[in-house]
Image 1: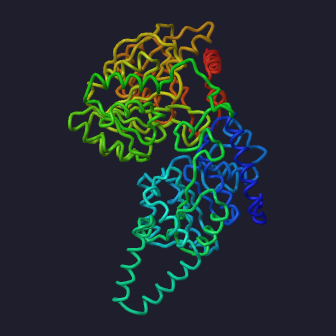
Image 2 (image 1 turned 90 degrees about the vertical axis):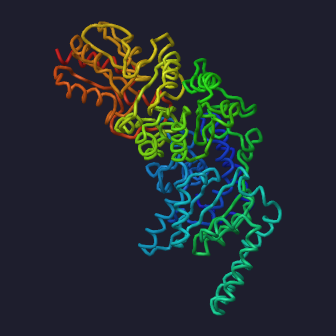
Length: 607
């Protein structure tokens, strides 16, 4: 959509239509709402001033880029947002040539912009990277690594800082806004350049005086922070004033240097119910537009709720329990713990590396830390898991939420890899519950286990119905049901899938083993079972490479047990698309009826 000839009134009308389209679609499909509504005017202004045909448009996380999708030939298919086979909830170059990069994790945009700027300079092209980043993403260290190099190299890059929580501008108020308007004007920029040229000619004394004057001037503006990095700063600018945004973006474009444009927006802009810094409206399921009430009511308790409620109960009992999460207190079930025990549970913002490392000394000092992070985000703290926890052999519990397929968030968020990337680390122990009772009992075990332990569990409810299980012992499995000739080995939610698959089988009666620990394995039990069951099927919501079946096959090889045939229903070596979890699993052939059919055909073919 070419909007460069639009009048301001036409742009405002377009922004309103985009908000309506987003609101209606997200109310039906679910998705990110408040942040993307707040960014509409910024994105309209970006498309008006910059050239999406050639300039890299880089969206941090990219959950706020819905307006960009609508402005780049996806209006008609936007109704399929986050649906299986439809368009993605994040930017994706596979989906559109106008999506510069695949993004789903926070705080990468400035690094990407620096990389793009380097390529543009090497190719001697007239293009400029434009990065849109939220103030929440500024809490991650990667941002400052990128700013540090950018300030030194001086590549032309425009960074639009979307401040939708007033976390930066609140202390400075009206004076700063007045000064920032002056700083954004062509007069100020020309004046500053002339002074710089004059000072260069006048020598050291004048340089010192000018520097002192400029520093005193900047102290009452929020730009001092960024300018100390060597970046130009303009703002705060009203992020919903299209005229001001366009004027400011044009100035930044002409500077031909790195510049931060500090904009202030309102989350949920245009939908009164969601306006403001309300965590609930960040990512939502289907809801009624008129009331804002959710249309999706699950009767089954989620694994996250089980974890949060029971950890709260344990924390009241054991005063040495502490915990941390990285910007996901609601999503990880820690909100009530942070509220009740603010000195023992912390949200450290988008800083997974810091979250992991900071728990090490607490374990060393005799506390019991629970580091609660989504599977996909714990990837960002991998070095710290190895170096700061496992190398020290410290008793930190990693509660890994969203393990397995997470549904509509898709490729960037699927929790497929934690078994593979953690299993290789010395001193790490891996366990997984499959229902509420087993979850509570593994948490009971974790309290007194003083070595690194990772516990994975799914988004939403467990597959299995709840029933009582034995207490946990390190490296000990649980044989749930005896059977004939065939053994189903389940790990975590895979146990429920194994039980459901058995119900689909007519003439086959497999035994079902809850593996419980994939590291260490229950070698004694596996040796014993190898005598009676010669065909093993592995069920786990994790990647096949380096996964649960791989651990079992390594064991069989080491033990020289060569007469066992192992098949696995783990994820193949591909990134997994977005969509409702059941539809995604169906596309992968992982629904119980599909697995049962494969097993039946497999057994028939081997006879």
